[in-house]
Length: 359
Image (cartoon, rainbow, N blue to C red; front, side, top):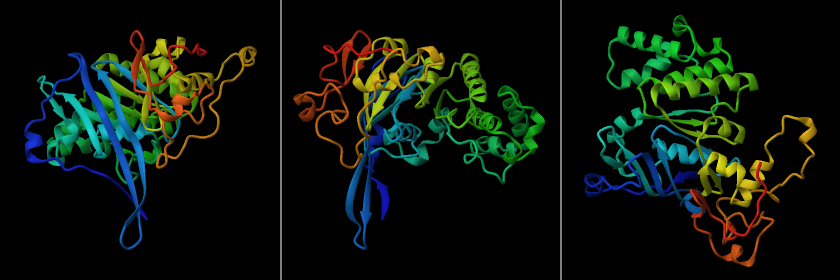
């Protein structure tokens, strides 16, 4: 048994006509109706036994210079979306529109691998686990310098100078470049991962749970580092996380995902003060309260049961099996992502009539 993504084949004619309109001049990257399906096959004849719909018609835009938080439970499709954006996965359907430095817009989802190199130098990924994302047999010079070498910096002296600069930028001493990853703590390793992501002077960084594996005190240091780097280099962030307190600290907008779909999208404070989707209400209720006297000040709001299997998603609204406000229409019709309040989008049939509890 094995999983294999269902991948469309781009024709040469499609590649020649990749320039398409975007929703705004300030948008750096826009995802339109993006889907990612994984087919599971079994047996000698490779019969299809399941089709996992990891992403289903995801649409969102990321403005240049902003930090957008992407939140949701484990298994909701956050990481899959990030890997589709960097083209580690080839999406099944939809568009990934990217505005290049010269202003031209290309559909990255249709680019062939040999044409992805410039794009993947400008959109970089920081992985969740700093212990497994760094090669233990390579020094920091080799780890951080590898993308430089792959993109044409053949001079070892130039690479050493650049790696020294990058290590200083992320708060590490330049002489550490001769050491191996085992000599560093988890927080230091994540700084190395960030330095590697910054090696090619990217415009956008996708941080996939970049602080979830770290201690709380170290987590604060890494978040402060990301904030400083954004201000210094005008970076655009997609922060993939399950921790809404991280989003509140660093992100201007937040997108909430559930079972492969975006169910709410708005400015961070709008979502925190006026949630429009019942799933968002449950996520906000799960944020720990630092003051013990406030922990029992109001009842905990939880989603019933477990998230359904992505290979056998329920009909209608994907959240209706766990929702406390479910009605008959929720069981039969998929709610579209629509503007339910000014500047706020939600995929809920009852968004306007519900008075959901804010944080």
